[in-house]
Length: 196
Length: 196
Length: 241
Picture (cartoon, each protein chain N blue to C red):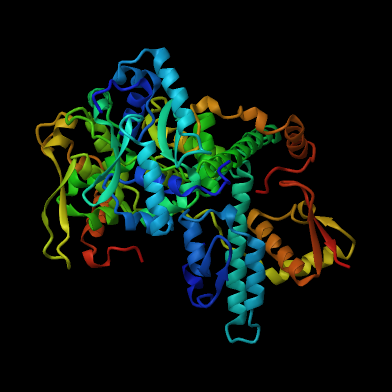
């Protein structure tokens, strides 16, 4: 069934779902490959589908763009959901990034990726959004002065810790050789952040 | 016009919009204040509204709950909008490791490697990074209490499954005749299974 | 055996495969780091593409051939380990007792089921690709997230202790050349079709792998035909023509 070519309104609808920010008509057109005129027609049909009288999701034309949002008359349910929802558990990767910031921080995104051996930018972004990681300064020794990341009060609260000293010391977790190797990676020049 | 009391389906629809993760029927009922029966009816009408044939947004029943997501036939437009390529498909090794966790799990990295006959640590790590595999506990019967691995909610969503029971039984995947042939080949040939 | 020493002679050999295109040495590195699945590397195509790039007249031609044979043999060994995991008792490091045929059959059948399950999963992932979730997410109230401090320490241990290179000790030295084995295979074929199993019954694992590489080369040259009726089934070498 998904073999059918999608209709113009479907394409616009899908793109609207994956953006939290309003999208301009021209950005919608370029993502969907529709003409200006087709985009306009698609938006008109979506405005009908997502009208406040007939839907819990409404199409809004705000700040020079279009965006889906919840119908204000459903705000009570949304607020209750927010109160009751259990936060998504953190992934193993997220735990590792937090461990890097806790034990080796403040450090740059590049340093996190070097220590972990994988690009960690997406995980870092998610943790900043969740208020567990924050930018605490910039590294002036590295070109571009990238931000230095550290754990937040929110992180300490979530772990029930008063301060970073509450965690077991690093040398109780890894061997001296491993620690040396970690330090080597940390200082292996921020300029060649990418893997060879 | 938004003074009208919202219809049950609208409440459910609004709550579905504000979650990236599947929401269980009971959580939907509790957030919206609807009865179990009303929630079910609301979901049925939304399933029609968000059917793959008629919408760019689809209602999925995955990982023990319901969620709105984009219609795969619109994926091209979404990827263009985000300027993000679709994640690379998983390797054969990754599928095997996931199959171990799904069917034989929770199990340790060592157990995965034993079943596959090759060290699987790097593959496991990649899958944890992609949020498809997670550590669900530790095996206290093994020295060092290694972590036990299991599949995640993200795995169920990515495979379009409501629950881990939603997969064919392991024994149904290989016919008894095939198993007999392997057994025969290995036991009746009279040759040693392995050279020194 | 490590792959470092072959850097010079094969540095100009590049491959074009569905799963990878680029320098051959990088392909080896990717496979060793488990970043590319050996299963997905069509070894036969790899051998064919090497044979096409062969320069017997070059000063380092022999060295190059030997390096390729060595690394290809190691790849075949790796692949055979993946295909028949039960045959490798070293996977967990310790030298275990050889498995009885019954135990072997048990482990192989378990692995066969997992292989099938993996194929099923591949199809499931493919048919469910392209669903993207809503971005209109309301964040949960601050303070609702709880993290276990032990989990953070465990993550630290994991992140900081895995900077070791992948083990390649199990790849022992190669003591025969591809040419020697090719000669052996030709001689055996003079008497008609021969099974790979009986041909290699006296060999150790590495030589078996090299013999396989030799058989592939000969098949490519057209000197013999390889037939296998089913996956994991017996492999038969037949004189061509």
